[in-house]
Structures are given as structure tokens and as C-alpha cells.
Length: 359
Image 1 (cartoon, helix red, strand yellow):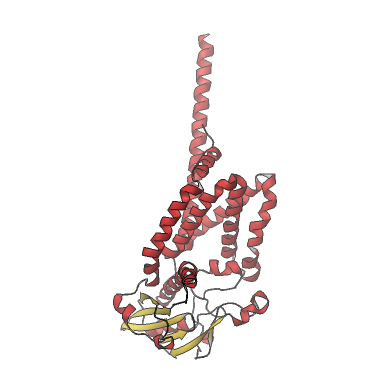
Image 2 (tube, rainbow, N blue to C red; image 1 turned 90 degrees about the vertical axis):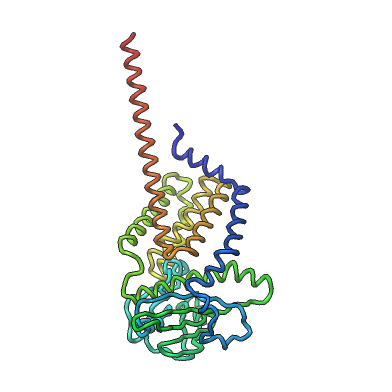
């Protein structure tokens, strides 16, 4: 019986780049036609997309806009304090710190309202990175407040508008509106394929984070968070083990370890460090083991991760579950293979004994 490694080699080599390319083209087409429009207008109604909101008049030349929205089971005065304290130097962005801190920007989401962060005026800013980030380049990493209607609307440069519309005394509609119309086909393509997926993914997650905090509940059920974290941790141990099992691979371990340094040293974020370790580790390990045959599977893995970030309510949990399933699946295959090997060995031994008795 072929070993697990031999089967894995066969699968990887079967996923050739020339077979993957048409699938990637189909995924890109699906993104442009279906996912991109859905992403830009996630959660919003037709009426909300057509209604005038605070900040629309600030950029009259930008005709293209996106509108995302979410219903929060809390009054507007319970939502507003969470919105006011957004920022790297305050309550974070309630998004994926494990992605943000991969680059060492030192963002940590608050789970309580801080009175000292409740003062915000036109001219103030949401800070995106520490002032000292990248030897002072973070000094200008801010998005200024352009319009403020306390308890109702907050409009920021680049980031757009956040408007609270009360549905009743206990329910709020949070609407996010941004404008985007870069000149020229090249910039429009970059905007559609790079900038908007990043912004929309994080904005989507921020709305969910605001909703959870204003409603007084955790972002994720604790049991799901634990299972996901176990999956990430076991995946990290498995990747490190695969580097260490062969002498020629051990020296390459320095690359994924180096990738963890910004997250660990600058942001003190273990989850972000683990994400960086796995991203670089899986990439490097794949090429060390499979050579150029790894290009096809790597592109499929990357596409799967990107789709998870775009579509999932909590990508960290989903990816953690995937890691858990992969590890469990590998263990099952190994155990079944070992059991079959022992059974075949026992049968062979029994036949040998019978043959010896017959003689």
C-alpha cells in the first residue's frame, strides 16, 4: 500500500498549474460579477443604497459609492460610544487583529467602553498605525474626521461615513457609506481587485464587531473560538515539525520564524505571529517538498483563503476549523493505514504458519 506521503505527492502533482489557471479565471469572473457587487453593498437595502447620507456632499465628483449596513439590537446611544473610540491608539477597529498585526501595527480591540476615548471633534482622526511605526512613517497614518453629528453620524476622510438610524427605542441601523471613483482603467482595476477587497473585508468585520459589542455579546461563541485556536496551534506545530524532520529543511525554518517577528515584537500578538508563521511556512515547505509542482496547489490555497476572508463572518474561526479538519483527517488516514498494515502483516504471518504446518 502506498504511504500517505506518496499519495500526497500524487495529489499535488495532479494539480498542475495549467489545470488551475482556468479555475482561477472562473473564480476571478465570479468575483467581478457576483462577489464584488455583493461585497460593496453587504447588508444594505436598495432604499439605503439610494438614500442621501451625511458626507455625500463632501465629494460631489465621486459618483461611485458602496453602502454596507447592519442591524444592531441596541439603542443608538449604546452604539455611538463604541464608534467614537475606534482607532489604533484607542479601541482598535473591532476587525481581524491577527491580520493587522502581521505587519506590526499594534492594534488591539477593546471590549469595554473607555470614558477617556469618548471625546471626538472635527479635525481629530482615527489613527491607523503608531506614530513611531516604520521609523516615523506612521505619523501620517491617520484618517481625519470631516463631519460629526454626535450620536448620529461620523464622516472620515477616505474611510467614509458611519450613520446611526434608530429603528425603534431598542434597535439601530448602522449604515456605512464610502465613495470610490479612481481615474483611469489601470487605477480602477487596482481599486477593484486590491483596494476594495481589503477595505470591504475589514469594514464588514468592523460592523460585525460593533454589533457584537453594542449588544453585549462575544464576537464568537467561546467553544468555536477554542476549537479554532486549537486548529491554528496544531497546524503551527505540524508545520514546524515538518521542517525539523529533515536536516536540509531545518535551515529554511528561519524564514517563517522571521515572518513572526513584526507581530511578536511590535504588536505582541501571538495569533498574528502564528498566522505569519503558517503563511510563510506552508509556502516555503511546499516548494521544499514538492518543488515547482507546488505552484498549482499554492494558488488554489491562496484563492481559498481570499474567498474565506471575503465571504466568512469570521475568517479566523473558519480557517481554524479547516486546520482542525485537516489534522484530524491526516490522523484518521494514518491510523487506518497502520491498522490495515497490521492486519495484512497478521494475515501474511498466519498464512506462513499454515504453510509451515502443512509441510
